[in-house]
Length: 254
Image 1 (spheres, rainbow, N blue to C red):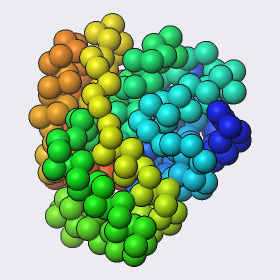
Image 2 (cartoon, rainbow, N blue to C red):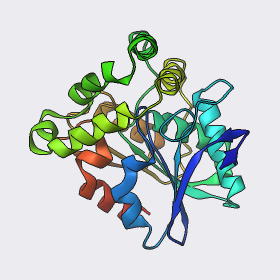
Image 3 (cartoon, helix red, strand yellow):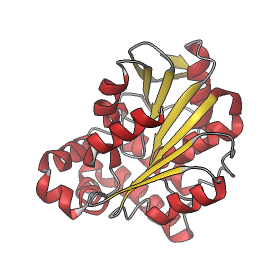
């Protein structure tokens, strides 16, 4: 559907209070398939492939964390949804925090999976380097590294189907769209504090090297009344590596 002059792939399932699910870098709305199926029994579940990711084509304008947040606000408006509980993963946690900061009336609750912080300079350069690799060599050049570094060793050994799905998510990205989203992360700044009045859930894994648990604990401490769940033995692809745990925590939170 058209949102802010962009064509975005959107899926909607179920009826009830709205829940907006926002994937991270290298992902698509399919990252949340297990949770979407479960939540759709009593919620209106909205998933979108962010601009330049998955089935959403690369837009003409710049891609930034803030432009993604503006697209989410525009999507809710286009669907006549006044407000929604919002779930974000990885880079999507920065996007949904930006949404909550820029459009506070649109967000009723916030859940962050594998929350990431504003990148340090080394992290910014790593994303710029990845963007250059994507443009030169395509997604096949980065997929093995994503599988090796962002999934826990336990997941790779015990759930090879999850590793295969993560590889497929990455391989199916448009190289230019993925590159520009890497550059969006490289240019990210901290969205600011999360409103203490906003219900906040944080879920991450003990083996998450991309969104380490200290990031979630720091956000929770600054918030004051957040719920923090640390799942043992999983890495950064939270909703895939611990699909049942994440689903149960989201259902309880919502």
